[in-house]
Image (tube, rainbow, N blue to C red; front, side, top):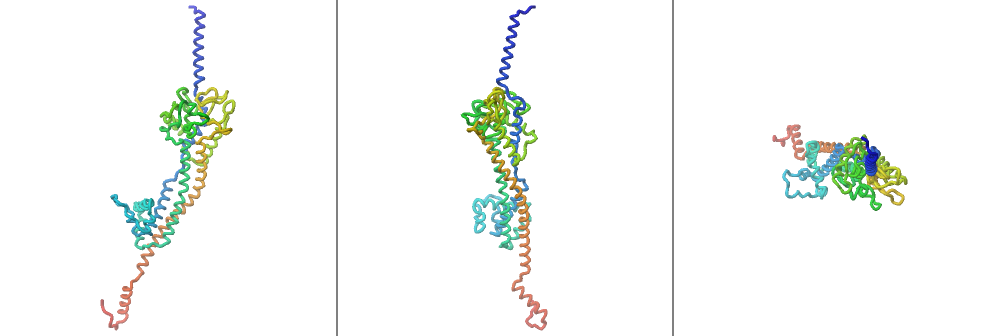
Amino acid sequence: MKIPMDYRATRLTIALVLFCSLTARLTECAAPDSGRNSKLFNLLCEVLTAKPSAASESEKNLKSAAQHTALLVSLVSADKDALATLRKPNTQATQPVELKGKLGTICAGPRRADCEAAVEWAHAGAQNELLKLLQAATELWPLPEHLNETAAELAAAAEELTAPEQTSKEISTHLTAAQLGGQKAEADFRIEGAADDRATTCDTTGATPKPGVSKALAAVALCVCASDSSNSGNTGCTPSDAGTVTFTSESVDHGTVLAVLMTECAEHANANQEASAELLRRVTSTLASLLEEGHGNANARGYSGWTAAGSAAGNCDGDKTSGKEACVYYGLQGTKVKKPQWLTDLEVAAAAAQKLATQKIAKQAKQADIKHLNRTLIDLLRQSIVNSKTAAANKQTPTSQAKQITDADCHNHKDNTTCKTP
């Protein structure tokens, strides 16, 4: 059958229209190509999985034991009945026992809880030796002054371990702020200030970055690595699409997709590292340098993430055309890139980590001092008890001394008529 020429033309026209329509849709609403943001994602993973260093259980126990031991010696020195007075009864008393004198001064106000905790610790099974020594020491009360002096040295040495703990807390506070920006972790995370659309949430509004991407690198990860309802199949960060995020509000899917990204992060070689000074300095410097990279024909700065080439850098709406992409934009303040809050938090955390590295060197020496002082104090306590018992055994009362003289007189002088049999 011969097909009319006009029919073939009509079919060709329809095919061309369908092809162009499909091409237009793919061009206008295409998510990032594979690996476009993999370098940034690797850096984000390092920060998002970094863990602040913390004192080991043995270090915590050493400090606690030293503080308790020093305080217990001070308590027994102040009042020989301190161990009994401060021991909490099995049943809760209606009114705590009033502490008087030196004991009341040492355990005044909130310090009473410390005193009671030290006494309870002394009665724990592991401290049998110390408890027996303290109980025996009440028999030679008042305690020698050099015991108090050594106890004070031990307490001061233990207190010096507080500085590294405070620095570790500073690192943790600022690292967590850079990671989450005050939001909850993973499944409970929300991009603060998410509204209107992706470009609004991940870009600037009135030249001001949204609080979410300014505060939290987790929000940056979502803006760079997630898909949205108009741009699916984002493989710019991960081998497969991590999921679709609703950028128009603080939606539950923010946490859902972040949890997927965190699972991907956990597989990276540099995941879950200690937040050391070296790591924090390196990622901070690299993330800051990425903000200075030029984007688009005009080399616009202030972006995190990749933007399509060939035109001026545009909005971070997730589309890979016309200079746009899955990215974050912070804008400029004059000629300088507006500094996001997460970058400031990382800088503070890095400085604190450097300080902690120095403190750890001094900490090792101080721990050795504490062990020595703790042993010295116990040895002094034991020796004081031995000395007291020896002195008591050698001490003679006037009556016993008189009896010894009388007995000697009776045995040595047979003619002494005053000597009588007891």
